[in-house]
Amino acid sequence: MADLAKLRIDRDQEEIVDRSRSPFKAIILVIVLLSLAAAGYFLYTGPLKPAELVQVTTVVAVFPSQANSILNASGYVVAQRKADVASKATGKLELLTVEEGTVVKKGQVLGRLESRDVDAALEQAKADLQVAHATLNEAKANYDRRKTLVQNGFVSKDEYDVSEATYKRAIASVTSAEAHVRANQVDVENTYIRAPFDGTVLTKSADVGEIVAPFGSAGNSKGAVVSMADMESLQVEADVSESNLERVTVGQPCEITLDAFPEKRYRGLVHMIVPTADRAKATVLVKVRFLDRDQRVLPEMSAKVAFLTKEIPESQVNAKPKLTVSPAALIERNHQKFALVVKGEILQETPVKTGSMVGSAVEVLDGLSAGDQVVLNPSKDLKSGTKVKVGV
Image (cartoon, rainbow, N blue to C red):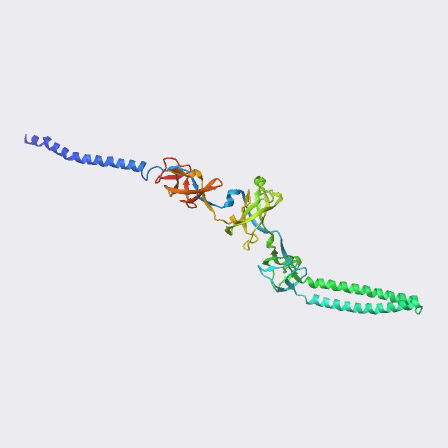
């Protein structure tokens, strides 16, 4: 009976244990509920809230001409008047008076070939001409005497005819000697290399001591000595798609920018539409003439051409660009305009001061910077701090 008494369950002790455990269970339950609430808060209102999908536009700097631009094309600066200057004679280059960048005038001597042989030939021809003139003078005097004597009957007609023939041969000899002198003068002149027009030397292809020949016919000889261009003839040759050609007309105002100096803009106009198309590229070559140009414009530079609807005044060609944004990106409350700027993944409501319209955009005077991304057509639910994702 004593052993059975030990197996008896003490109900009072069990109740005490259960009562001691119940507060612990309550605390655990409260902690779980608070955790779920916090998770829900962060999921729907905090950093874990799903990002809103928005469309954005970029604040850009626009030059005055861009409001009137109807077509853009790219091309290169090309000299319409250029030449590879060579020698007409073959010989060793003994003088070169120019280098790259030298400005020259038409007829100016750029270089000269070794010329001792042709100089000597010219001197010989001039001496032969002097002999011919002396012979002519003697023959003419004899002819004049025979002419007077034959008229008075003192000499025979045969003697007169001989003196007349001698005189005519002397005249022919002088003519031949003069032609020989001119031919040798041409040979001497051909040793000079002269500028064919006013221009600037672009490249130098030969140096003193090298053999120069027409067309570089010899294996170790040079053809062109220098290449030069008339800088006043510089134009931009741009490829325009056939589908856009109807937007381009001769005399149309343009604005030219060079890739080397993007901050500088030049006025231009369409000089020519070349009357043929490139079958492979489906483009037509358009030549644009500079209306104003400085020394920085060089042949073969890359350029961009904006074809305009109206000419830009010279005073506004290089005016500072204006910041612009789409009007659809602005919201207005209490007579104040705002824009929702995307900063990382968060929106920031920014007050904006606007100016006049620039084409289809509005000028931004204050509040935004170039490159800022702002929400386009923002909904009423968007505000500062909203997490967003930029749509494609």
